Length: 166
Length: 166
DNA sequence: TTATTAGCCGACTATTTTAGTAGGTTAAAT
DNA sequence: ATTTAACCTACTAAAATAGTCGGCTAATAA
Image (tube, rainbow over all chains, first blue to last red; front, top):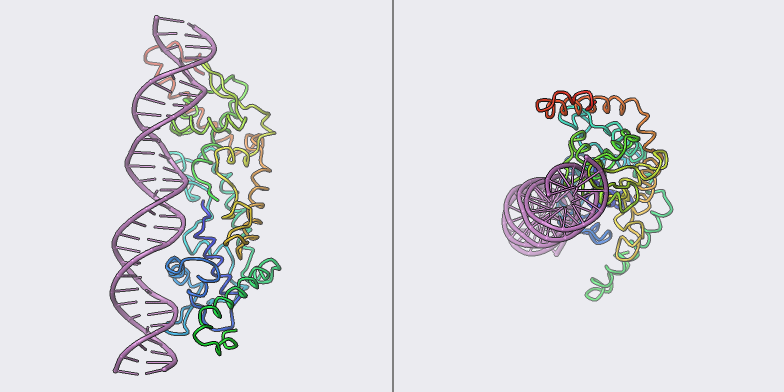
């Protein structure tokens, strides 16, 4: 099993979508900016999230991504799974042929662990995360930073846009 | 976080030691044979297990490794930790500086997950594993195979050794 | 209608980790 | 004196990670 930046990025990006839901499609450029994830890498991840039908895309200007289901119906385990990071801790992917066709000494232990992790992660929905205090605080900080950055970059050319940007 | 063959091998080897405790030191060659793990690789893993004081070594003929503590006082989390496979699921190793010095959106989620996994794995001792039915069955099968193999290889040269081998 | 936006797609790449191998040295027992 | 088996260092093939780069397409807005 492995849980690396790939899975963490995927969950973080999905949570960003959830936090900014109801404001129309969110562009990957925005997520990249807010979460500090490379745009090209996000594209790869969202290709997989789209194939797993966790998000819907809108092309063209003003386009971006939206959650394809209600926040309460998307859990963390699904998201990690979608980007090919299995939560499975066995070496035989649960088949039990770990040692030349038969189960190894610790097979059942890893099965139990996998079950444990899966149960935990699938019990947490995006809505659960959105409602957490610590998540809301970080989100607030990120949004402030994002708006500031926007004013900095566009403000000099067109100061009148400041209100529109916020 | 990652859990690959390295950590699985370490736990399997430690469990092999536990299962054959009380029969003097167990050589890595025996473990290699029974568990199907390369001898050189086992040497590397046991160097780390020894540094973490989970095993004691005896050099020379008849030598090998023994658990340095009681089976009930060694848990799975320690073993995995000893071979440098952290059970930590955060990207910042718990420090919280995941996104340019500040916590990322999902930091606390990964902290919770890490805690969950650690609690699970550290609640399981080698003794717990030794007492499991499924472990005992696999161990029995492996020991039979091991003895058979021994008879095959030494039996042709000195058939009288058969009883001694068992 | 043309420029821009932003998703879509495939190929390429540097770095790191995994899972070993190879070759030798040292300590203890027969 | 020889064998056993731990101990140690260095090397390596393959895979995965974490990206980058360049170009294409659909939709919108000037």
